[in-house]
Image (cartoon, rainbow, N blue to C red):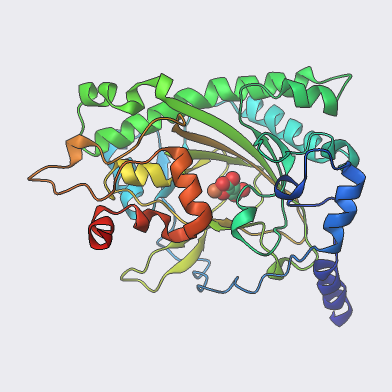
Amino acid sequence: MEDTKVRGRRAVNQSPYNYTSEICISRPQNTPAKELSIQLNTRLSHDWSILYDHPSAHPIDLNSVPVIDLNNPELTNKIGKACEEWGVFLIRNHGIEPELLNRFDSQIHRLFALPIEVKLKVAKTQGTDSGYGGAPISHLFSKFMWYEGFAITAGSPVDHAQILWPDDYSSFCEVIEEYKKAIIPLGYRLMHLMLLSLGLTEEEIDNSLIGDSTKIKNAIHLNSYPACPDPDRVVGLAPHTDTGFVTILYHNGVSGLQVLRRKDDIGPARWVTVPVVPNTFVVNICDLMHVLSNGTFHNVVHRSMVSKTNQRLSAAYFFGPQVDVKVGPLSELTGPEQGLPLYRPVTWLELQKLKSTLHDKALQSMKIEELRKGA
Ligand SMILES: O=C(O)CCC(=O)C(=O)O
Ligand SMILES: [Fe+2]
């Protein structure tokens, strides 16, 4: 027993696996992959001490993440309530074929199963956000995460896929394309329902930026959390909120995602494990949807934990505004009767910059009340 623990601890303190995280932030444009890998391996620390910042909910906490059937006749209300109370919910009967999801899953698995030398050929370089690398939020934390990822931000991953699989890159690209085609309408449908639940009319939604697809942009992050010998001392993806409007998350059925439930009548703030329910996606409310809803929807803090025995794979599909689009509280939700706007408008890029310096205080700094105090 003791022996296993010591082995586990050593594995966590010394570079435990044969690939490296944090490639994206530290790889200067021309560093050879091998040299980079050596540099990173000497400074790895995956040992997190802040994991127990909030207690974990009892595993059978009855008050758990809502599961919403998209065929429910009360759908709009259910979605509105889940966005306000939880900022996260599962959706079933979403219309995406299990067969497509199986093929998507196999390709994610195939990607991360490649040897590290091959994956490093498509490592993100400074100033780019597509490709293989560490956690996109790694610059916010001093510890490394038990994570490797592959980001597809600008259209097709074909350039990278050709490098990864010179002889068979099309099966990866095709499935990514099919997945996007299926998930994009689902994202729009969910955002539409969210605005309906806030009381906007169909016409108001059509005239809002959610109704204008040229103003929306999206990206996929494929995530891998390998099995870890000492899972209680590492974190797969550290606590964060997503910055865009909405994230739709696919995962391979290995538990690990946790959301921070706010203090309520039942108890103090606590980490709640998102249940694994077959044939569902997880939907998260992100920062800019919180802003758009003038604070009504909860941008949920979440993190990923890792398993001792199973690799966890996930794919986050992010919907957000185009870089130059300013997002502020919807005018329909503010006024003499509803109240003043809580936030000044920002672009997605601006918010990302604020988060990289102010961390979880970024939204606070955009509060109009806060700005008045400072004036
Ligand atoms: O893998 C997960 O469960 C969560 C991923 C996530 O939060 C993200 O990609 O932003
Ligand atoms: Fe996230």
